[in-house]
View 1 (tube, rainbow, N blue to C red):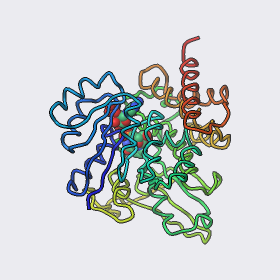
View 2: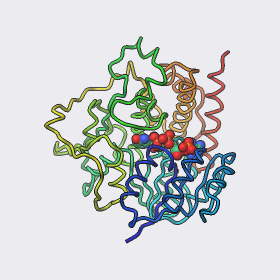
View 3: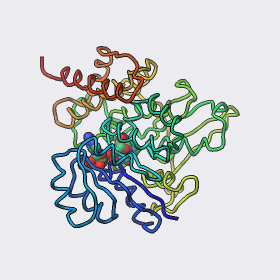
Amino acid sequence: MTRTISILGATGSIGASTLDLIRRNRDQWKVVALTANSNAAELSALAREFSAEIAVVADESHLASLRDALVGSGIATAGGPAALTEAASRPADITIAAIVGCAGLAPTMAAIEQGRTVGLANKEALVSAGDVMMQAVARYGTTLLPVDSEHNAIFQCLAGNDPANVRMITLTASGGPFRDWTAEQLAAATPAQAVKHPNWDMGAKISVDSATMMNKGLELIEAWHLFPVGLDKLRIVVHPQSIVHSMVEYRDCSTLAQLGPSDMRVPIASVLAWPTRMDTPCAPLDLAAIGELTFRAPDELRFPATRIARAAAEAGGAMPAVLNAGNEVAVAAFLAGKLSFTRIALEVEALMARFAPPAPTSLEDVIAVDAEARALAVQMLEPA
Ligand code: NDP
């Protein structure tokens, strides 16, 4: 049976992993929309390869080159944020939401409003929109499947169980490339060092988030929305090997864990094939060769981001959106060489202390909070 799929953020790391799986099963999939921000060359190549119905660049200044590259192909093209949202609302059996940052929020909501299936990788959208997004999922009867490896692991460990029986959900964290660095070393960490993750091959922004541990903070908030067991039943443990992707402990002290190689094609495959399974090209786990799986408590003195994210969740309302906006601005400044590594989390915390808008109740509210928080974060980074 052929299924239709759209991929928002097709030119990114998650997009590439998704398309790798589609490529191996071409006869089972028909591609509707593929989107990118500015990479028209890669997007047009993918659109041709997968005979997409439409290719969209969010940054309209790249539309002309997308059109030129797709001339004569019969593939529709469009550009700009409204076109991106329109493409996301085109009927597709499953949409993979893999844009990075809150920029993916409106198109992800458009995909959710189809009332079909959304594979969610774009954690910033859920962190920022939280209740607004989960209410839309309920209202439209959408099946929301988590792509993030930890949440996908938890989703698998919860299958068939009553969440009321959950004692604790444990999110594992690799600890990132700097997990054993001293405070002095962290202060001098460079963007090139931060984007070199020891276990995972990912986009630049999430790699920096992983290095600061803000990625785990965002994931804590993501888990809080996806699995309604309460914040006090969510904890983080550092697991440097990234083999155990997360765990669920039940009231009888039985803990279920999901294990797998550190390759995003595994959770993506579980989403694409859900509720059944499909093959992946990944090498099966060889536990004897791995030898040791180790665990330790996170160090929130060297890596305060998880503490700050938990505080944002506890504050609730608009605060997770403020946290996310501040983090996006700070990470961009770090990658541009304008902010030191250890200032990233501290800038986010300072923004949260200065800006506490009322709780958003609509998509437009969330977008407004995000925009205002970003503007203030940029202003706070300017030299006095
Ligand atoms: P990448 O940076 O590799 O790719 C991001 C994608 O989003 C690209 O297609 C990019 O287009 C597009 N994009 C960027 N900015 C915008 C914008 N303003 N408007 C529209 N599209 C935009 O990111 P990843 O694939 O690593 O991550 C994607 C999401 O998945 C993130 O939310 C991340 O946290 C999450 N995630 C990623 C994992 C991973 O292993 N990579 C694991 C778990 C979650 P262009 O190429 O033109 O810039």
